[in-house]
Length: 563
Image (cartoon, rainbow, N blue to C red):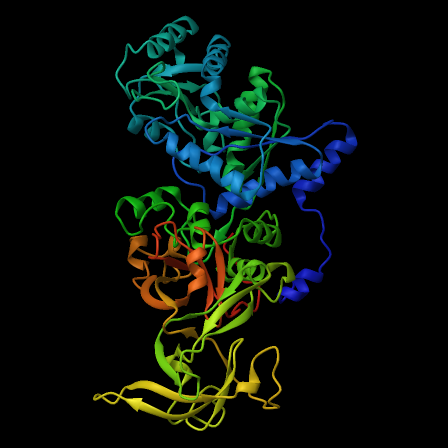
């Protein structure tokens, strides 16, 4: 395994096992073309784990000249909302993917009902009046077989009549289910007469109150794949035990032979991936919403300033595996940092200001300094910053009694101001408490950046902002939402491990050019990190979210085996 990013970059790209399967299927003539699907349930917002599945399903289809359907698995009306449908489509478009067709499992409700009738008429399904507790008690354990109940021997005619009664709303919710008649002694628990339909009186976001019975995921999923002629149904590893049932339904109904393949889902350190738990964080106000920049949702990452290019690169780097791993979130941050270094414009922002007065600066003079927007991108151009001899620098960039290798500002020392001049500190002014109030300096007129003829060499360069021509901005300093590496496996309530310091709001002073920023625009604040303009910003009241720190602290790919 590569030990650092440079080695990973150099490693020759090989086919993942899904690509190997597809290439073999195309070569053998089993499939003439490739059709995949991305089937999210609209019961929450997409997160970074979904991004891996998106990149895989859309990616392999694109690579082999195929197509991908977007199909919403909307079989549970009590948890699904139009808001989630729209957010999912927004996230897919943001990632840069287009789907061939937009389908819903609810499009197939009439067809699925017909499929259920076929199974009943073949003697392969029956109506069960058992309670959920009774069904569970008769199902057995992984080491002991289940037991048949009295309802399993109902006649085909009675089962059909009762199923229509369920459809017509003649029975209370929870009073009856339709179950497949397979094998209560099967080693695979999913094959022990799984439930096909349950009664649920809930308004559906698309079909309204037309239906009061809804298919279970296992029944709707494979049949929807078959209806659409999906060639490769790619799922995560938890669906391995479901594959036998997937194939059973398709075989008994004599449908298009879609095939299910499984890969390891994404597990990311310091992160929760369960939509149920993410919803808990939202509902209990631990975060400000699904798009809170601390959330692992794609909308949260977008608001935080992550780029779609960085997320796709991250998914490509971690690859497709058959065994569960815990991926270090630092790898994702590395990919974000690497992309933003090339694309983000530079700006100067001072977080903890102390005033510098240049005593030999001509009174009333304003110098227009030219600054690069991004030294990594020549096309990014330049901007002008006013300079008038009174400015702010970071308080930590001055020391009254510096150590030997302190290359910033101190009395008697020289530094360069970024894109400006070399200055020399002469003395300081303190307030009554002893805190430094002003730093008095002189500048070298011949040392202007770009036309320096002073011959002076300095070791330190400081960022700054003009004290009179700057704006106060709010900085949201985001950190990891959880204090522990894998909150999903810790004892007790996962919310006990929330990092109370995951958001720190500070006021900083920024150059005026940031007034022209657009919501979502990304910047590198020199010597501070990467930030983007938040959607809650108002005119002259700007809020910037920290995306990632400037320093690259990722040194090795961390893959912790949890399989």
